[in-house]
Length: 190
Ligand code: 5GP
Image 1 (cartoon, helix red, strand yellow):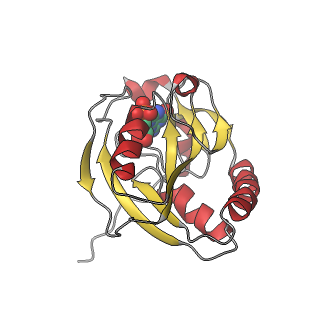
Image 2 (cartoon, rainbow, N blue to C red):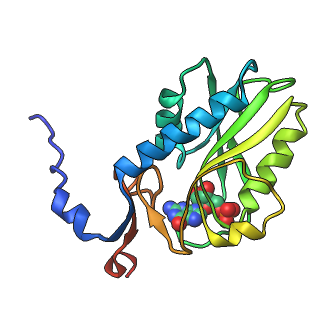
């Protein structure tokens, strides 16, 4: 007998969402704008994009394809959140880079910066490896991040202080495959 998964009911998924904050079209338009900035800023320099797993998978894939120049891609996995919705402040490396970044221009690609704890840790970790530069790209930034000392060079969207999912961002490992950025209905949390 052939095993078959239950088909995902799209209306079930939709009913879990409270509000769409950013549409797929808005995301792709903004990525195109920021890609032109990145092409200009890194003209004549090699560029290594470092994606932070798993949340940055979608933005990394779309940003990389939107860039009209050579790039390399590598990935790090770090833990910062558990399965809840508040930052634990605890960061550890689950998967390190395969690339030696000594002398390289590194652009970290993040899904979201909230308190900035994860990012501060990541920047100091990468900077200690002797890169030519380490700059930050984030698709989303929350208000608390404005108080951070760390400079974020490229920001897709400033969003309110709400927990969001979609386009790579999860709640308890689900909703990453939504094409938009959305908030969740309260019944999902209960
Ligand atoms: P920070 O250390 O800046 O407080 O948190 C950064 C990490 O927390 C992000 O990379 C992301 O994994 C997670 N995070 C922060 N805010 C949200 C949110 O609104 N939704 C989701 N799904 N994850 C978030």
